[in-house]
Image (cartoon, rainbow, N blue to C red; front, side):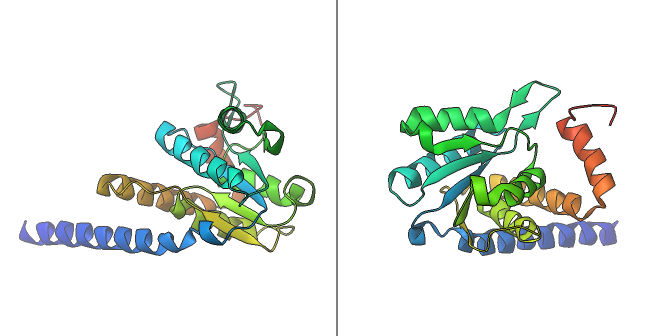
Length: 206
């Protein structure tokens, strides 16, 4: 059993080291200080604490003139009759009093579909510089996915809310991102089937 304990020990060790390195590298995604306009793309999350932090960060940047407009994406849950991006847009509008500069993509259900829609409509809905507002770890993934789209804008930056330094929260987020990367790497048909199960589809028969 000693060999098994050693394997478990080293697996845990390398997992924690990889998590720390990923978290540290993601800190460079926050470019809030260098922003001078553009569209803030705020990603939906069903974690209320994270959602509130993202909305607050985006609204503060909007009020400071570092962003020109906000565009919420993700959170379309047809099985539940829920439009997460729209709900976040309403919260941001009420809190800022700048509803005319805040809108939402009510079709995207996840990061991938939100970024595909954004790239497709970038010239009309998000002209100019684009700034992803989310957890820094997600910003890394969002940039990779967005830049892989054929019609993406060339100027993409990131803005991250002050992160929770709770080690358990960091570990949870890193492993969520690992799962999301695996999902993104899957063939499109497999990925859509998983997302249909997790997020729901407009037509369950499809």
